[in-house]
Length: 335
Image (tube, helix red, strand yellow):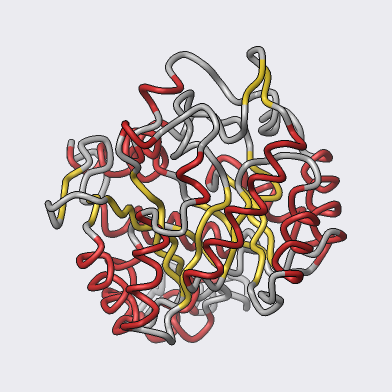
């Protein structure tokens, strides 16, 4: 019988597909792994009776009452999510030019933190130090003659950090991008007896077009109007500058650093991790989440697959932790 082809084909000995053949093999050799311990869950808390208020521009995300927020922290604990980020939704009548509500020890976020820590003391709670939820103009800092003033803002941020720490906050996250604020907040916390409170600095926070749904969620969009934050947030064109910002914040006492946004800035995550080797977080911001949700709702993408792929991309780039609105969904799936 004539054999039309050689018995031994001249193929390479190394076949990359062998380790992709079965699910168990793929899991065995996976280089990047995602677990609930890698997740930080951002949660919006409001001072309204309604336990859960939908946010149209963030499908699947709600503003929660304080009691519902406490329940959410309990859910995070059950799923193994180590840190919940509390973002306040401030009633319009409490907003002002000088952001006085930010330093009110009885404001909604302070009461929510206290309630959550009393119920679940072993879950970490993070609070942003920034003024945009509290200002009538929607900016992260105080304003004078149309300009954001740095040093006066930093002084107020120190007071804000102290009331949040007193409420039980474990991680203070300066997200305002004022110069020198990390060092000032560190000194203020230490002097007030909160040396154990960690600082996760939004070290490389870009003036991105991806924050719109978040501003809807906290109610700052109408206040900010057509204004922008380019005089204090970073220029999306810059990469070396991010390393400078991170180096400054670490020198001032930051325990962890953040790159924000996420998917558009994974090159920055990689550079930061390679350059400093410190705990590095990334924020999958509201616009990223909303885009993926909208595409999935239209049937253009498979939500379950694309959200997991997006978070694996963040881990692959070097992120130690990821803030994502999909934290609970992902944690449930990983279980």
